[in-house]
Amino acid sequence: MNFRTALQIPAGTEITHRDRLLMLGSCFSTEVGSRLLRDGFDTTINPTGTLYNPMSVAKTIGLLESGAQICPDHLFENQGLWRSFDHHSSLSDPDRDKALEKINSAITAGHNALKKATHVFVTFGTAWVFELPEGGIVCNCHKLPPRQFIRRRVTVDEIVGTWTTILRRHPDKFFTFTVSPIRHTADGLHGNQLSKSTLLLAVDELCAGGAAEYFPAYEALIDDLRDYRFYAADMKHPSDVAVDYIYSLFASSRFSSATMARAAEAARANRRSSHRPMH
Picture 1 (tube, rainbow, N blue to C red):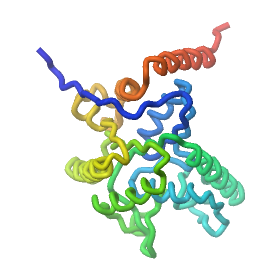
Picture 2: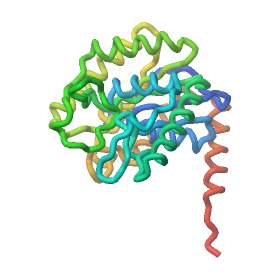
Picture 3: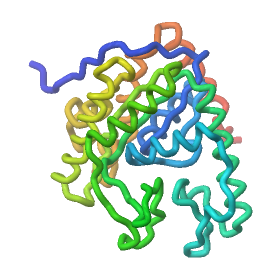
Picture 4: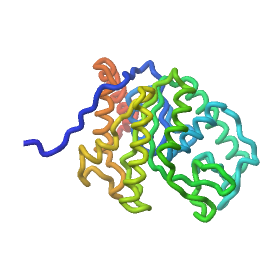
C-alpha cells in the first residue's frame, strides 16, 4: 500500500559545474541557492536582496540589466536608516554614503552576475504588491505604514506580459520558474491560495511555449510531503528536512551522475572546511 503521493519530476535542462547560476526571488531561492553554493556551483543569490512578487523581480532584472548606479536622491531616511524602495533593508545604513556604497556595490555585482549567467532561477512568493500612490511598485516597503501604499493583487495577464518581454530579451539564458510553498497568511488561507493560484497560472502560461521551465517546489511540499512535521515552528516555512528533500528532487532532475558525484565531493569538502576542532 502506498500512503503518499510521490511527485514525478521530468528531467529539466542539465546543470553542470561549468554553468553560472543566478537565483532571484523569495527566500526559497535563498534556501536552494545556498545548497547549490555548498555543492560547488557558481551561484549568485539575490544580489540586491530578497524579492517576493513577480513585478519586483522583473523590476530588479531591469535595474541589473543597465547596472546604473543610484544617486543620493534615490534614498530616504526612516527610523535612523537610509533606505531604497528598490533594495532590501540589509543594504540600509545609518550613514547615507555607506548605504549608497552598499547598494551600488550590490547593483554592480548583480549586473555582472546577470550578464554572465547561463541559468536564471526565479521564485515567486506572492501576487500581492505594494505600489506608491505617485506610481511604481516597490521592491521593499521597509515596513512603512500601509497607508503610504496601494496594496493590490496583480493579474495573470500583468505577470505574463511583463515576463514574456524579459524572456525575449534574454534568449541566451535558461529560465526556470518556481512558486514558493511558503504560505503568506496575512490575507487568510483562502487569500493565500488565490495569490498562489495567480502565480501558478502565470508561470504555466510562460512555460507553455518552451521559453522557460517550471520546477514544482510548491507541489513537492503541499502535495508530496503534505504534513506539518515538514514545516518549521511557524507552520508556514518548510523545515530544513523539507528543503533538503526538495533540493534532492531538483538535483535528480537536473544533474548528471558525474555532476552529482562532484556535488557530493564539494559538499564533503565544505563540511571539512567548516569543522571546528574541539582541542
